[in-house]
Structures are given as C-alpha cells and as structure tokens.
Length: 99
Image (cartoon, rainbow, N blue to C red; front, side, top):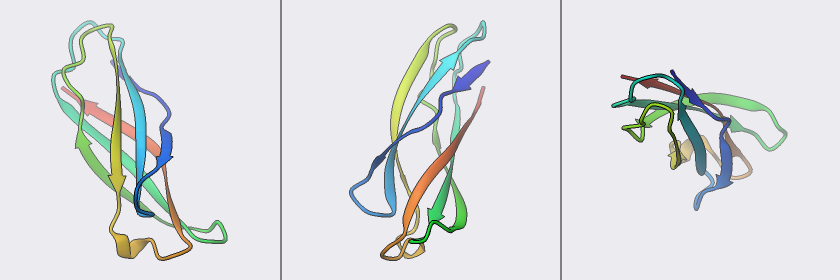
C-alpha cells in the first residue's frame, strides 16, 4: 500500500509551471517497483475562478522499499497558452499508481 502526502507547492520559473513536492510512503509488505504519479493542476483566473483542471503524469521515484518513504520534487507545467497574464496554476491533487 502506497500513500501520497498532500502536495507542497512552490512557484516555478514560469507562470505556467510550479514545483510540487510529495512524499510517498510504502506501508505494505513488498517494494513498489514502478509506477506513475498523476497531478491535477487547476488554472485559476485573476478573480479566483477555476477555469480548467489539467492532468499530467510523471514516473514514480521507484523502487520504494516496504516500510520506507521517499520525497520527490517535480516540475509540473501546463501549456503556456493556457495561463495568460494575470492567471496562475495550482496543483491540488496528486495520485499514484504502482506495481
């Protein structure tokens, strides 16, 4: 069983990117050998309106041994044209699938 912490966010070097740090904890009895991390990133307008939710995926930092935890920071970006001036992104949910 692999659990994923709440994302810790930091601004990226462009307005359509952010740095997302998550901790993966393997509470099961066997190692997580591979997998995928999926990010749900919201595009937020200048007035706080949530315009879209975009997903992207990256590899899980595997292997994660049984009983171990691993923290990783990902650069999560969306297409630049989706985030015009005055808008921002906010990654609110991170999920993982492992094998």
